[in-house]
Length: 291
Image (cartoon, rainbow, N blue to C red):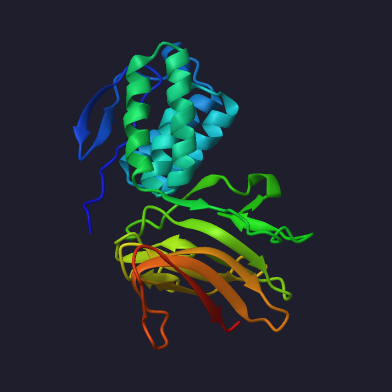
């Protein structure tokens, strides 16, 4: 497992100095917030100071909550950046990526090159820790009433086909990319996805909320990925097949049988004999799975 980056987000509303620590930036407190400097601290100022104190104590989730409320009361660039860095340390990388991008833009607009640089460097580090999911429904998958969820967010059909960032469990050694190319709805409301996963890493986590039970070992350089989720978003089962395979589309028969297709190069072991051998280049496969 690669060493985890070290991060101490205690940036003030004033100036800061920074030094690199394992690719991240440790910000040092120099001055108080604007309100406190005038001798009239606001509720937002007090929450901001509470957040910094909690970060110094290592109470990251509580600190993030303080920064979030402070930002809601007074939207300041320094508070925004502190919240973004706090979310990254908390392991909520997808949220941190969004906040860091906003903090970078705000700092650039405000002429704060120091904050813009910190946000940009932190954003680059966060992106490297993310997993990515692409939903590309197969023909006929747009079943009326079908609802897809991603990280607790409801995805409208208009959001399908876009690349989305997924937060990874803290400390997991997982793939940095997953792609879904086929989606099919089952009569019971379940959803089956096929695509690519693995990418020569040790584990793929199919449900970040349950990293231990939903992890599957990668097989080859790129694996054919198939997974079934309940209508409420719970993982039913998932599998990876390699050694260099890609899933393209999936359909579910009235009997419940699942048919998936894709292509592979080299050998393809679907768990039942015989092992399929490519005749040169990429060969198409068609596989049937029990419900």
